[in-house]
Length: 375
Image 1 (cartoon, rainbow, N blue to C red):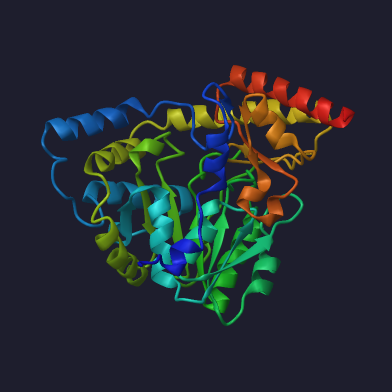
Image 2: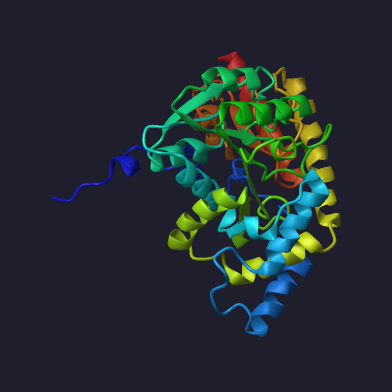
């Protein structure tokens, strides 16, 4: 009888999806990491134009169309002050594939991957798929990743450590001094830093900083995409950039698992990156307003919430039974331990939902907290 690989047996369906399945069809979904904005009109039109012109019917280059890769390189020059060669960019099927490529290209069986706990669910799963050994590192009280903790966790078996700022599920933003330290650690220990920057533009206090700005070697691999920045989750268009030698190894994986990213999506992404950016500013301002609403309401409930400085998530410390009670009353939130043991006692709440719906959900949560305290 045929069996399954140990790698696939070591992972399971995401706990986030399990929560969705448990919720009713009319539930308010605060568990989904998807902006509630439309994709930019000019991005949509670029895809339509490419399709109608017959430009999106065939495979593109494995790395993606040249104009898109040039737009990505220009974005990094503008936002990180780093010169990126368009040849050192691979357009991928979302940031998820970019993460997969980064780990597959750099992790041998048994080698360690350090990542935040709580952290994005893919870090643990993709490490196991690559045959690596997950090594989660507990976050500080403010839910930021401590460079000292990362450096202490590094051993001779460490291949990669992951930095995610702004963070999912925490909304935490690493300060510049920490980002500089992550670059130093990668350089000095000859360990790859995979920097997951898909929430880059959504920083409410201070600025976004990338390890690629500060690294003195080619130790940093940067993952980004259009899904969150331009509300294009369904288009599945991300990218990875790194040194030429690292891109060449990641391309070896990409060409066999994907061949190339969706051609229409590539044209849409190019237009999104090069066109007006006012939609991004609008989204950031809206998310900050919703964050403040959420923080005020939880303060009124007496619930402690480490202040999220970016992305569109919060992780309040919640009483036992909170998540199940919310789901029972039609509000989907995700248990913090779905993102690792360090998330126990928290819930992840996405405020990528319209403000009135968020208010309605917060009313439900307030009643849940009151009822739990009265038990």
